[in-house]
Length: 76
Length: 200
Image 1: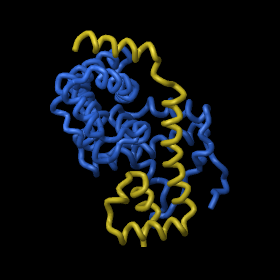
Image 2 (image 1 turned 45 degrees about the horizontal axis):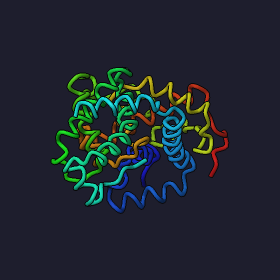
Image 3 (image 1 turned 30 degrees about the horizontal axis):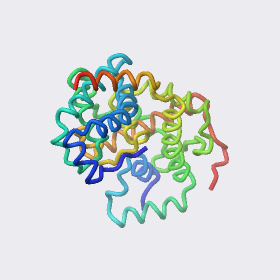
């Protein structure tokens, strides 16, 4: 039986797809029973959502893109 | 945001350095490259310079691009090599970091959660939470911040990131696991919490 510590490590490191089918099944069953590991998984998803939101909220300024593109065009 | 491998016609145009195709491609790739450079801890002005150098290398070597990965992944590879030539800290990875012990302390002797995470789910991703995350990201080691950005913001696949950073999938797993745990701890310390009654 997998423990929360192992399940959270598999989720947080994204190594689950590279484990055996038996392990993946074990994690699936564990998650069905463990609300805290489900919450951990949701927090992992939330971090990605926040990071992507941050990139959208603070975009790279258009003038910076133009400046770099123009320099590259000149030098190539 | 993920960037697919190019079509056959795009690939041919890149390899023969079609100016229109290259201009459009490079312009699209400047923001993700700048984000990655900044995530790697490169100062703003230097980030512009290193992105410019990266794009010039891409143009000069365009005929070598085989299209097996996306142009973005190839560009990130060039960018990373350029950055690690100048900023050595990007190469280092510690065997054990304090965050490992902090995460460990959340479990009892049987490996069950004794102090589970109380972070909210993605529906709570608001401007305030994003600002908190920004501050938490700033405290991370450069290499971990870069790995997290490539995975979560640029949404590159594991094998692409491993190729770019020249690390194994297991090492990348360790980097991402530590980063997520550090960010969770940091956000909780800043007061970002969901309901005490964890939703089932």
